[in-house]
Amino acid sequence: MMRSMKTLVASLIALLLLVAILPAHAAKPHSGHAKRSNILFIVSDDHGWGDLRSNWDKTEVRLPALEALAAQGVRFPNYHTVPLCGPSRACMFTGQYSTENGMWRGPGKQPLGSPGYRGIKRDVKMLSEHLAEAGYKTGAFGKWHLGALEVEVPNDRGFDEFHGFLGGAHPYWITEGRSRILHNREPDRTSKGHTTELFTGWAEMFIRENAAKDAPFFCYLAYNAVHGPLRIDESKPASAPEAWVKKALDRGVSFLRSDYVAILQHMDHNVGRLVDLLDELGVAENTLIVFVSDNGGCTMEEGAAGGRFPGNNGPFRGGKATTYQGGLNVPFLMNWKGRLPQGMVSDNQVMHCDIFATLLDAVAIPVPKMNGKNPVRGMSLMPHMLSGGKKTIPERTMIFELWGNIGLRKGDYKLWSQIGRNYSPDWDAVTTEIKHTDLELFDLSKDIAEKNDLRTKLPEVYASLKKELIDHLSNINSERPGGGSFAVSDKGRPQPKKTPTTQTPKRRSPDQFFKNRDRDGDGAITLGEYIGNPNGRNVPALTRRFKKIDSSGDGKLQLDEVKK
Image 1 (tube, rainbow, N blue to C red):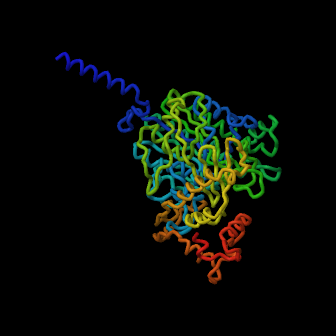
Image 2: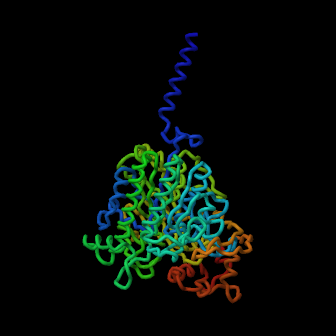
Image 3: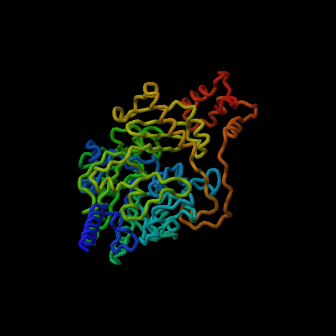
């Protein structure tokens, strides 16, 4: 009897110790949890890494609300994203690369199932859908840019409420009856004012309503700040409220940057409103706040994607729509009062796909291993944060692709190449080009500006990383969904139903690639046929690649040369 009692006591002690060492977030299963945690997920637009002072102290931008969240939470200066609005958001909401989830570029107007279609696949479940299924009240406010088809709009993708615009850009000033703003599926003809204030106000109402009901909420607030249009000369009015422009100018900000800086600081003020609201409602300790920019800032370079605007990407090369670090590295921070460490700065390499996994894990929803036919690439950052950084993020390969602009990072090493904007999403063609291309190799620990190509100096590193890239591109499950019509037009008007397209195009083989390039059907590809339309193409790089494939040196490519 005494031995049985001792055994029972020992077992109880062991059980108590086991419970004590479990992570806090793992000890609260989401099913039936009476006080499920809320999420406030805020995304800025074209906000460069250098315009968060804790990242880059040379910026003249002052963002006190965001800096306070970072100082009282966790900041990730080594966060990476794909460098365009739609693909970036798709990765955050699916946990997958844009090459896999279907949003290889911004959402387009091609019919579903057509070769030109781009959008999140129907069999890929979005973050909002997971949360809705777990009983969350879900609201999206501001910019969507994840599709305008009837099966792609927020109300079809897990959101109870949507108040914002579907496209990639919108004027900051809303005139009553003259905007592309929707409330759920219907045009909003009555709202007027500045988008930053309107989006914040709608998010505030959503939070108040659900906090009053003690209902767990997921509030997705996607500002159009600091996307164009922005004033950079005297020919146009400012997009920011004049009082905020004046504050910037009075503080010595240049006229060129005054509207840009004012837009960011006005946004920060509104973020502060919501942080104060969470305290006022008594839900701050039960609300995870996430802030991130979708991609790097636009620059003043000729031909810069998204327009020529004075973005600030700190010490990095490139910007929006490039896979140099200036397009990939953006501000990212998380704050959870009383749960996450204060003032933690993690230099671990993290990426857009991790947001999907982290938010699910934070509220104890199991993170799936697969999403549709491709793996979930993201990993939860919760163990890393809750341990104060003691549990490090394992080194992994991160791959970014946009219009044939390729970036691969693993540890300190980075592969980069521009193979031409016209190839995506024909991954067979992309793979063929990569095989015959001399990519550039950088050591970011010594060359953050990506100026010194080490390909010939580190051949083993180069060969290993290039093989990883080719293997990834060769194994993308790129089937496209079929069926669907546009829910609303660009101007917010309902669209008539269209006959769905269900055909799924096959991936092109090298033989098909050769046939398409051989325009005159003479059995060989000339340099002109190989380059095609030179607009938007890197002609010098394509010429070098052509010569490399042309092993016979006769100025024409034969099928056997393309297949090598």
